Amino acid sequence: MIMKVKEPKFTYQSALLIDDNDLDNFINQKIIESAYFAKDVYTNTSARSAIEFLENLMKTTAGAELLPEVLFVDINMPVMDGFQFVSYFEEKLLTGLIKVPEIVILTSSLSPTDEERSKNFGVKVHFLRKPLTVEMLKGIS
Figure 1 (spheres, rainbow, N blue to C red):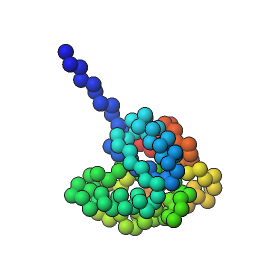
Figure 2: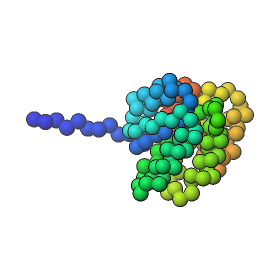
Figure 3: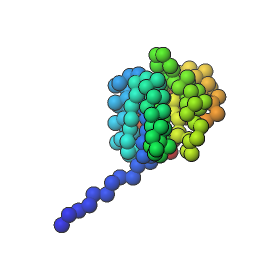
């Protein structure tokens, strides 16, 4: 007799981690996967490469369907920081999207100014401080 293994129920189909620290990306990916938060987890080590990834996805015929449902963005990154990424995403990539992904600023910053700044976007932004935990993920979904 062959037993079917039931696939776990994931909160989201896919998530994107944007952090210039490979170790943080690895650890956060494992936390997201172990909590069944997202079935597919993509990582980018810069905001620019994440923009390129998202723009390329959107050029495909199924782009809107393939777009990650949750974007985790670090604030402190070289060249383009997390706030600049969210601004760019809001201004250039939101056009034509049927469903806006959840945006999560995931940072080690303790600055109240950064937290306040995250509230000034047109899209809702969750503000979380590292390290990411399973409990924190429950507050997103």
